[in-house]
Image (tube, helix red, strand yellow):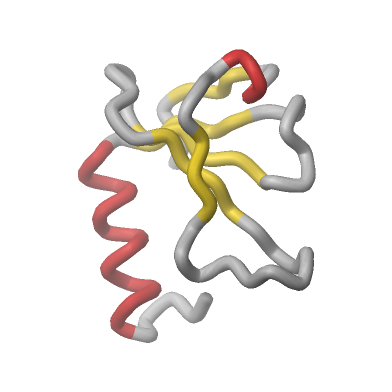
Length: 73
């Protein structure tokens, strides 16, 4: 569950696209590294939309599940 919501994700700098995202404009996820409050995550198609901020532990568990196929990408 997200720990925090940032109403306008464009206020943060340093967004990078997930390596699981494709270049065809499909489901793209972006994250910010080194954010003091956790891991901000946004939909790349909604740059000014909200970002959800997850704890490092929760984000790591999610990434591990996706990579192992437990939570399909």
